[in-house]
Image 1 (cartoon, one colour):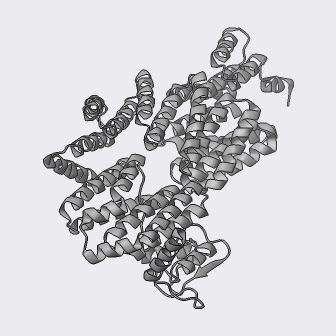
Image 2 (cartoon, rainbow, N blue to C red):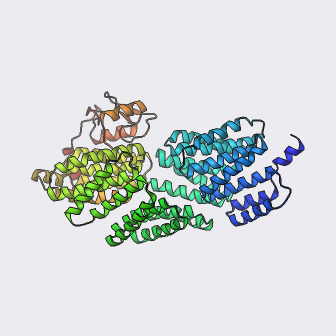
Image 3 (cartoon, rainbow, N blue to C red):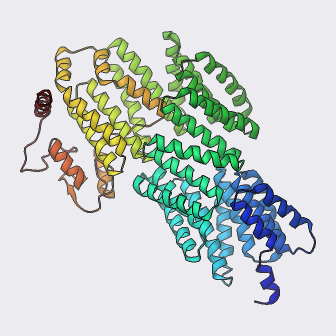
Length: 598
């Protein structure tokens, strides 16, 4: 390498100082230095391109994606004057990163592949410089595949990015990669324990590096992981910490997103005034940014909160504002959001005519083949609630036949989501639905499955909740038998099952339902070696039934203690033990109750 090339590689002192200021979150000071640097004379093209790339990184940390894309495109064109160069790779990857996080995927993979092809021609570059770009390439590519729902490929790429980052001591990339792994493990894979470990590691690294944006991002990831584990108080704590930092960084995009999340969590906790306060703050920021889609989403949430507070008039006011935004957007998915909220307001009316209109609207929404998953889930849950109201009033079991296909649709969504917290909540709902037809066996199986999933994936708080539900069912078995003998009205059954309360909780949390065992699932889980009960991968000890159903060791033992038969074919599991009936379990429960009283 000659002297000219060596000088070209050295980053000017001004840009080094600006880089440190960006790490500290002092964006205005960094911009001032870069402005001075651009205005002074005797700058090489390499220096100009380096300065513009640093600006792109600053814009990315402010989540100003459109600005980043524009400047990265300009910088890419400038960098072409340098010939084949790593800075051209940087410009392409920064543009691709901004496109991915703005959910613009049409040409993103082409840009990533262009960067990769160019990088492959620059192998003569310094190993550290080359591997730094290779690590960033894997990171950007990982998020692209993550948002394409290919979590396994995304994790492979993040692991590769992490390995390269460690090899060259690229600490920022190490932190981002570990946190991205944690996000993917929790949100897309349901590997909660490992996700939490990685989120804590990433957060510690961010603190050590003293990069304010990565620290704020790490709190966001920790909040997301804890929310997926069902530990809402922990989640709120970390989201509030991230909010403080994003305010310091003046990152309006992240502030609004965090406030929306906090609004959702306070809603789940029943703190509706606090939820409303967070969401109104988020709305104000979104108006300031002028993104109509974000504004519409905020009104969507505010309508739900107002309805839960019993303030139908305010919900109607928010709906009128939503209508104005929807008319400007002219977007199919947002039109469906509009009709959903219209149905929601009609549903709250005490008049049967309006509730019938709401039911018809919900059904029309479900007919749309391109329906957004979130709206679909909320529509199915609200339609279930309307049908349960009808069931309570009419005592007509045919209404359950209408609910069943809705449950099936929710089941399919939950299977694809692979959210184990949600799967557990689903099984609690399905257990209560089984009680309405006095199917004690089915109800007990759903509770068992929920408990096995919670224990397998470290959802400790939820496991305690399910255990309590199970014990409550055991103590009420005799009462359920009496209701069955008396052919009790549906209202009495629903009151004992507390089903209305559970469905309402599901609507508040916007969760999904999952399916029970079918022959098709036996075949699928056999091929993938997935336990039929807890949905976890069977790695070592297992029980394989003659019918092909596979159970991990823990679930096989749980089933043996429960009823000692395979759930798919009803064949006895352990021939050294008897098959247990639910009558026997009822007697055991009554004996335990007598002992407690003594």
